[in-house]
Length: 217
Image (cartoon, rainbow, N blue to C red; front, side):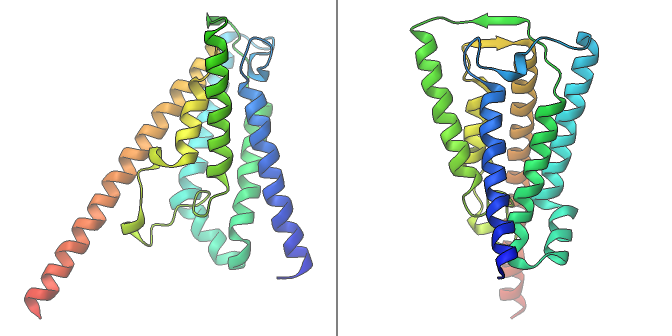
């Protein structure tokens, strides 16, 4: 791998790290710490439609990157050693777009105070630690489907578990934050059920194929 490739990979992971840290500041914990709860700039209905559109776009990009067309395109057109850095760059661009285009809905639903606020703050930093660990573990940016026997339920992985906890670990829940948390939670549950179903189907197919070979052999 040449020097250009080394820098390309290194900066890809560094930009992904910066995007994740920006995400932590974006979601925020505490009344004054959340960038997503800035003063509103558009009417509430328009903000909801824009935010739902952004969440739908992220969901589509995730499914393409994780197990669909995007993964096959990158593996075909990019040297094998640069596939994961390229996907790190793609994830960074998607997160930056999401954070920059999000429209605030800052009306408060609940606002806990100390000492409960401190406990939630501890959960918040634990969640983002799991996100950071999970994002840079091998196989997290792209889940391989070539070895179904090594598959684990996504919600049991650090990245998914950390994201789920990070969405809800807040002492100051706004309408926009609740929209984000419920949508992300719903998608993660759907993705986990979908993966478990596909894994079961693959394992059943392999078992029947093996049994058929034994009978015909």
